[in-house]
Structures are given as structure tokens and as C-alpha cells.
Image (cartoon, rainbow, N blue to C red; front, side, top):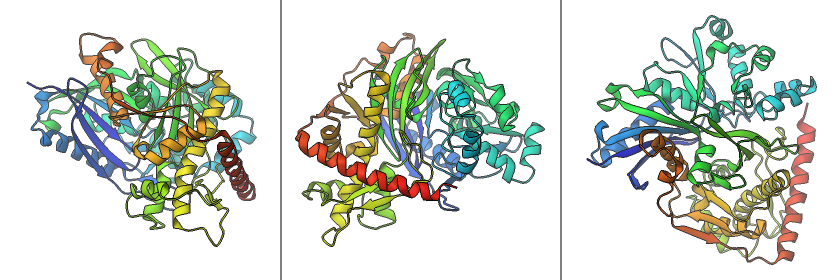
Length: 500
């Protein structure tokens, strides 16, 4: 009987499911996009019930594609958009409000007040994170303060909180398991990454009851079984990891100093720093990479809020392209950016700037600028933002990158990958199988159910790769970076005007 690992890959714009065979190759893939809800400028929400429904739908579709049933599925691994916050009724399972998405900036002013009250260093030492609306903590607070009766119900033990992994585990087990893993817990701004507990002092400052928080487990762990009614029989859930940490694992970045960048809705560059956290002084995040058995591994991370989402903006809002793939053809057919630079700060700027009030800026427009230049400038902006994070990470970690491993939807763009290599002046390595995030959590899930409990079982096959080498002349690279920095200064000046 053929056996598979089911990877549930719940992302910001779509729910996906991939069944990996025993050689670690995708046997079937199903995907479904869901609604993006924008109640106000800078606010982003999802319907949590739609997420659950779409995730179950693609799981069943992936099984149906190859005629699999629950007997064929050895284990389920869950990887997810991080920080996105759901609060629901522990009896009915009904969310009390839409999921507040990681991109949402509605709590930026409250975060400013915490910073002004001198809380930054305390939060950073405990959680590894800057105080920012990006993380779950202030999203929880907003729901408790703005949904009638929510705070009272939370303190009375009637409500539960979870990031998307927790929400899926709770629904898969029909409410029997309320849990998360170290990697997702470390993104809430409530979890002490040194002591590995929900931090009582932070909970007290924010007046969040610990009773709503999930149990925290290793990333590779038996969380429970999917209810038999969902798939015709029970299937063990043996892994959970935030999407970026799962991608780091999927790239086999098991040693300190190894790094990857994911070009998804946002851009996320992570470097494994081993069993000791490295605390940044210049805008990077210290996070937990994963937990296996009793060992916890840490990472440095640079989070770019808008990467592939900028290409979607070209398609959906500006109608400059019909398909995301069109951007590659247009950029390759356009000699240069004609002096046009685009800073896609739709929801502020993440690492290394952490400026929530920045907004998207296009500079350098002349009468000769056209659609093609804006499309090319949009792709270039993704690479520029990544360059800034790479340089900061090299400085903070004291390690010069020798290669950058990449994945994510926008990593398929040949122009972008070549331009990225030209900017950072190191090879960019893209695996033939770009399903690295799902592969990472599948490999974590596999570790829990296969006898050989070590990483060799997930690294037994060589993955074909394409490598992009830098070819741009240094003078040209330097000129382009000067233009980018000028555009960035314009964006930061706008942010100053918006900051209350």
C-alpha cells in the first residue's frame, strides 16, 4: 500500500495541500484561494471559517486526485501563515471576529504607546521581537477590547486564541486539542523564547488571560488525531511549524549560518543560528526555528511585508498585467527601469526599518516612463528589500553568505532571481521542487512516524537545483542601489508626516 505524508500549507492568500510520497516527491497538489478583506486602509482580515473550509476542501481534493484514503496517509503536518490571530468560542467553535492578518496595522498606535512607555527592551529580551502590530499580541488585545463582551468572556474561560496552526488543529481534532508549536508561539509577542513559556509579565501588561492561550509543544510532536469523520478514519497530526521556519527546514538549513529567503506574499529571510539565540540591535527578529525532542533551534529573521503581493497589486488593482507570470516577460523585455523606483510599503516597512506609517511610493517618473518600467521597478523592489535584509543579517551574525537558497511563488520569476543575485553578489540557489515550505513540514511530520529518528531520512535524495550567478558590473549595482536608497528616503519622509 502506498503511503503519503499530508502537508497542509495554509497561506495568506490560499489554502493548499500536498501529498508527499515516501521519496519526498509531491504526488498530488490542490489549492484554493480565499477572500482578502480590507475594512479600512492598512487593515487586513480573513474569514477563519472560510480558511478552515478551504483547507479541508483541498485536503480531500488532494486525496481524491490519487485515490488515497486515510489508510494511505501516515501523518499530517501543518504549516501556516504566522501571527494571524483567531479568537473563538470554545464550545461552539464560532470565531468572535474575523481573523486579523499578520499584515494588519490597526494596532500600530497602541504599539507606539508601549514603546513610549519604555517597554521595548523588556519585550525584545523576552520574546526576541520588536514591539510591532505585525505580531499577534496586540491583535488579541484589539479583539478583546472591540468585540462586545469578548474581554469578559475571555476572563471567564469561554474563549480560545490561536494562530492558524492552532485553529486548524483544534478543528481537525473536533476541539479536543488546543495547541501550537514553539515556532508559532514565538511569533505572538507573548512567548518567552528563553524560558519557553507564555510570559506572565507581558500577559499582565497587556491584560490577556493565559487561559485563552494554547499549550506549546515541539514542532515535531504527536498533537493528536484528525477526527475519523473528516477522512473516514483517524490520521495522526505529527508536526506544526510557521511557514518560514518550515521552509528553512525544507531547505536543509540545519547548521548555524545557513540561510534561505521565501518570496511569497511577503519576503522572509531566515538564518539558522543554532541552539543559542542571537539578539539583533538593528531591526532583525530573533525567533525559534523549530523544536525537535528536547532541542530548540533559533534563527535570525528579516521580514519584508510586501513581496509577491506587489505583483498581485499590479494585476488586481492597476490591471497592468493579466497574470503574475507576465511580469517576468515584461521585465526581461525592458532594457532598464528608466529611473523609476517603487517602494511597496502598502502596510508599512518591516525589517530593518520597522516603520508602520510608511506607504507605497513611486519615484523617478518622467513623461517617458511607461507600464513596463513600473512593472520592472516592482520586481526590482523585491530584490532591493531583500538586499537590505541580507546586508544587515551578515553584519549582525558576523557571517558572510556564500549562497542564498530561495523558494516561494515569486522565486519562479527568472528576472527577479537573476537581479537578486546581481544585487547581493552571491549565487542564488533555487530547487527544482519549489514546494519547500510544504516539504519542510512534511519532513518534520515524517520524523515523528518513521523509525530512523534523525534528519538523514529527510535529506536522502538530492534535490535538483538551478543556480543564478551574479553577472552585473559592480558600478551598475552601486548606481542602482543609490537610486533605491533615494526612493527609500522619500518613503521614510512620508512616514514622518503620518506618525501621530
